[in-house]
Amino acid sequence: MDEAYLAMWERQVRKGLVEFALLAMLAAERLYSPEVVERSAELGLRLPAGTVYPVLSRLRKEGLLEATIEESSQGPPRKYYRLTRQGEALLAAMAPVIAELMPSLRQFLDLRAKDDPCE
Image 1 (tube, one colour):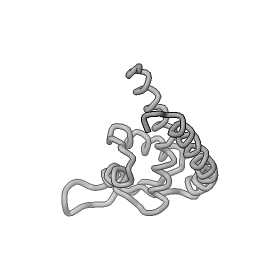
Image 2 (tube, rainbow, N blue to C red; image 1 turned 90 degrees about the vertical axis):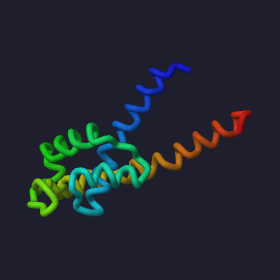
Image 3 (cartoon, rainbow, N blue to C red; image 1 turned 30 degrees about the vertical axis):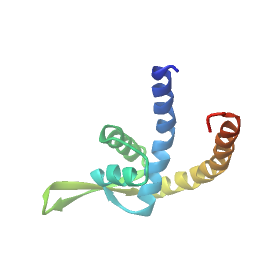
């Protein structure tokens, strides 16, 4: 197995899901930047800060997120993100695509399991 190819493929799969995941998380609640990283890990998607922060910044510049800065008693001011109406509309369009893909991907995994003599 080519480890480099697998690593590249995994990056591409994750890259395609990061925007959807961030939009979905921020639709549910307004989050402080580090909370986005923590919440993604809690939900089973390992997203390092070095991945999350640039995507949050880009989504904000594209008008999909709104950022507000609030003072904190625990340190420097915090930047909180939430969806804009444009972000809500994009998430609403993305959700059915993801929902349609999920069962298909499960079926492909099931096919692999049936053909794999090790399982």
